[in-house]
Length: 184
Length: 219
Image (cartoon, rainbow over all chains, first blue to last red; front, side):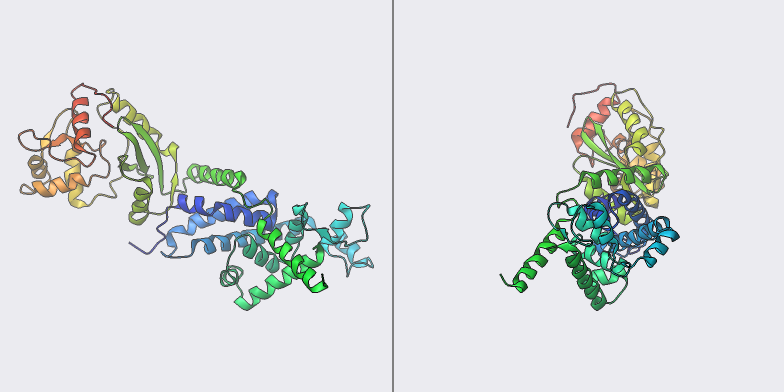
């Protein structure tokens, strides 16, 4: 017999469903998590018999989930950014300082303090996770793979397709950005 | 507290909040539901190579597995389902999911058989786990009528290996689909029961069932 994966798919699914689900909720949000989850495991099922025995199944399935999350973000970006809105932003004097997070923070708290006010880490976790979802793709995946999926840097690098050094850098940049945007 | 310490504790707090995840660390019912929807879709779309499910019987819980061709494995309660599935993953395909609906006909026919109302099985079988010699032996075995029996030597002779009573015994002992392929109908010459992979008490119970005597559950 060829060196395929020996773990029955049902057990593979039962073992990894939690971390894939958590990674996807962190990365694309609860609304899109289910679609991405289905696509991740269907893709895994199709490739499954070709997988070599002894493969790191956890890192492998999270790599697929990372790609499905990227697809979901790209699809959403295409749907959600009409040209007029981009034009309005570019014309606004604040555009250079305004991040999506700070824009939302203002719209969520119209009566609150100055625009771009840092949001609390505790309490409304969803604000932290919205900030995570608004990170650039590589930083977002690095943060989610590190903290949600507990992957080591080496596996994060292979999941997002970069060097280990670049993965570390993305993680640090993502964390620095989150610190700036979310009140410590 | 100087600003450096406070920044470090802020960092630690951020990392702790990230590590907790969007919904905390507890197992999520949503993840379980998503996995269940996925499993149902895999079965409905025919994407699984093997489906399995437990089947109640007078012997306790049997574990059955089927491919697209038919029933490929029936395991007595002593065989751990994980071990059965691992062997199937190695021998046939790892694309295995729980699929009670794939085993509905198997469950129905076994129920009827165990209650004495069914004398022949009509479900399709997949012989993929059985080698060439085993196939010859087990095909002859499958042709033994309900309530009848043959000796090991007779089965061996019918399988074209007249001196191969022992080899026939081994092939019968390795029967991956007992009960449905009725290896319990093969006895030693002279009427001695011989052996049975599921235990002699079960072989005896099946033989009396087929004589019209449904005994109490033998376990």
